[in-house]
Length: 541
Ligand code: C2E
Ligand code: CA
Ligand code: CA
Image (cartoon, rainbow, N blue to C red; front, side, top):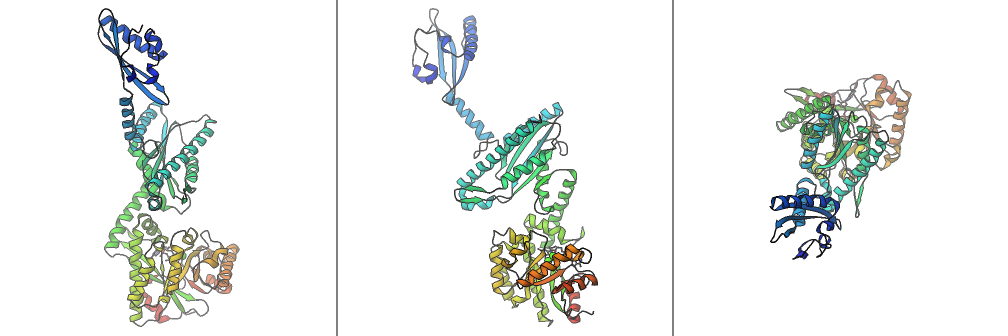
């Protein structure tokens, strides 16, 4: 029975409410605490020593901790010393959160991910089940910070996590209907990367479907106080069936999967790790390393492929095509290394190099007195989107006193369609300067003939795939015919690429195509060999 109380106000309110003289001390405690405190009381009685106990309870959404101990007093009395330890407890809690939670979103951070993944992998080994992870990587997050600020970046991260949580929960609920429910965790690995861990199942056949659904959710633009953020995501999947069953092994497998993204045509951005993918990525990384070195060492050269007028077979231009002959790997096709250069950012220095070389060559031929025909340069969408491309070309042609009509840029229609960037504006400025623009690979992208009139272009190149089957496939012929008709309607020059036979050439002439380029009329050759096309000027037959 409580005989007296002293400085009780130092205890949390809920705890001290019942501490009234005359009350039975044990009856003031909740059921759980009674057990603990009684044990401590009994021990103290027996040993006549101080015995401490801890009482935890929640009040007003807050966790409170009171530490107490029994101390023998005079004349058979016992003192119970009680101390509010809630502050200490919440400090510990905060320290835990600082260390293991992502500050912006409150989900697990890298440290917690690693420790959690480690313990799940051990558990899976013991239970003979598997673990899978999906890693979502944003390719261009950094660019938002300038407009939305750090505060906006925090909100953006929260919106991303919310989408992941809702998407994952609804998918797992559906799976539960099939009595599959993996244990899951969402973590933030770094600013741009989020990871979903799933464990405790025999297999993860559904994982690509889940990754695709989540990716779709993440890819819808996020509306943040007047700023609309459309983020580009790639997903990498790894599971313990195909990847090494360690934290590092799984995480780097997702990194491989994400890196492999450039090897595939645009569209599908979910990649699942396997050993083939690893080998391919290794090869790509090696190509990137050698390309970087060979760009610096000046190993790359330009070749030129002639273009001929279909009415009189006269030379009307040429296309500059890059050639890379590496000392170790031999000849590597630009179709292989250009996407790798685009992925790694090397494309910008490569593209500068191409522009310089081609402009030098145009000036050299002019100085040697050859017939002047336009030369086209393939320009990557990444280069076209830079702030400096217009000035770069302006300075380049002015320094060499090249008439701008002798320079044509070949760009693919895809950059026009997702052309929210500067591409459109840059192309218009370049055309105002007098430089010509051709739409490359026309018909293979998301092309719609109806937007053709809005394109800042002078020329359409019918893609090789249509030319290849133009004499055998009526659909290919119909498409080529349509491209030619609509192109002419909007005053564009229409050229067919990849012409390999006389039959193809005749068919194109019949359809009213303006010009041709292909192995049949001339393969890409070195600048030295190309002079024979100037001299021939007109093709025989
Ligand atoms: P592209 O712009 O469509 O270039 C035409 C490709 O078709 C060239 O391949 C050319 O050699 C090839 N070709 C020409 N006539 C025929 C033919 O009759 N039959 C067949 N089967 N092929 C023919 P290449 O040189 O391997 O270039 C592949 C791609 O690499 C190019 O496609 C272009 O997208 C890119 N590329 C090439 N050079 C550059 C460059 O300097 N800069 C950039 N950004 N990309 C380049
Ligand atoms: Ca081209
Ligand atoms: Ca092409």
